[in-house]
Amino acid sequence: MSDEVELSYGSNLKDVQRGYSTHVDSEVLTQDEREIRRMGKVSLYKRVHRGRTMFATSTSIQASWQVSLAYV
Image (cartoon, rainbow, N blue to C red; front, side, top):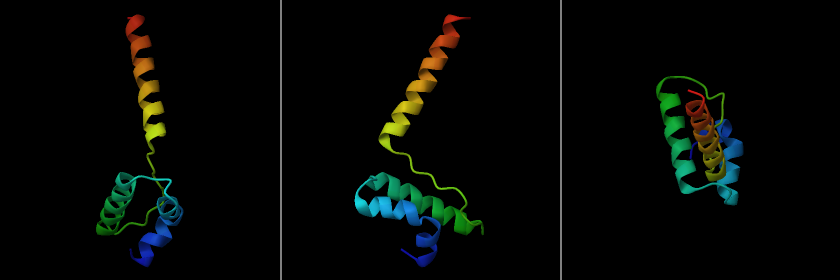
């Protein structure tokens, strides 16, 4: 990877190198970095969507949706 990617996604790359992240995460980061560079922007936010985080978020959304249906 280039130095630019290492600077903007340094902490996330370390996670990937340590094995804390999946192959899909690194692909998403690479695609995001490519899109950001294409638009001429600087990356300000780092996104890592781990399995547990995605599961917890989707479960919370589903539960709140089901509760809202119960009150309708």
